[in-house]
Amino acid sequence: MRPLTIVTGASSGIGAAIAVEFSRAGYPLLLVARRGDRLAQLGLDRALCKAVDVTDRPAFEAAVAEAEAQYGPPDLLVNNAGVMPLGTISDQPAEEWRRAFDVNCLALLEATQIVLPGMVKRQRGTVVNVSSLAGRNIYANHMAYSGTKFAVHAMTENMRREHAADNIRFQLLSPGIVETELLQGTRSDAIKDSYTASKRSIGGGLAAESVARAVRYAYELPQDVCIREIVMAPTRQAS
Image (cartoon, rainbow, N blue to C red; front, side, top):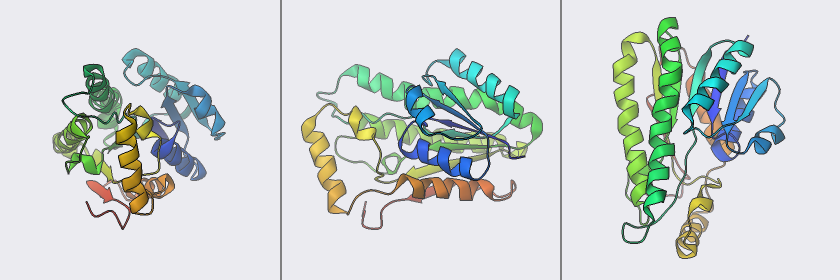
């Protein structure tokens, strides 16, 4: 029997594509997102769908415990939940910065802390942290978002070094432009129009399904092989 996979932010985009990819491969799933109705609409077998905000640690812990009772301990956690409120230091509301760091960074830390003790005890497990090329490069209007993703890069590498001796893999996923709903978190129509025009100029973003296949490939390699980072983008995306 395949081991349990946990995917946060699984209601759309990369998270939903990973859920479908792993379900088709026979993995039982814990799918977490605020929009529980969207999780149910995926219609996946052996998938426990929980309408949970990842910043609510007790609710996430309860969901993990329920999934473990049904499917056994998790072998893979995909920290995919994220928000992308684009803006500048001069005019972006501070609450958007706080929400971005709460979801993209602090919730990632807490979710990892919840599943990690069991992985260490079993001396196996994989954590995939979804970052972005915006965690490697600076782009206009990405000030707070890039800050969160640079943090994810640093935290993931530190986690990997801390637990390499425990045989735990930490893998960083850094995609470029992807066809997702993340842009909906941006208030400014001008910024959204600029982003959309950039995406159109390169022929569109990556299909989320392509990203999901890369995650499954890296995960299904033997436990003693750790692909530390996957950097992928549309071929026509230059930076």
